[in-house]
Image (cartoon, rainbow, N blue to C red):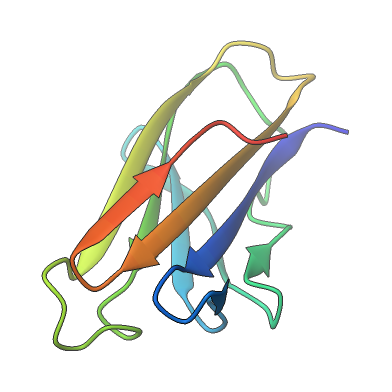
Length: 103
């Protein structure tokens, strides 16, 4: 399976972060969008075939943490093999975040 997915976890609540708006860009062009489900997942972000290049996922975390420090989190990554699936998890709190290459 190829494509791009994400999973957002609220580290304060210790639960998935439902309702986070997510935008996906290839370069400066938007190629997908979604909202995290009850499990904090956004599985079908990409609306076209995956290509080699630079992608960026932008998460609207202000809606989750209106008094937090980060209004959004932007994660830029490289797709080197379009036949591979890319999973980009995000762990968020009002004053910090972390991400990694998931599976």
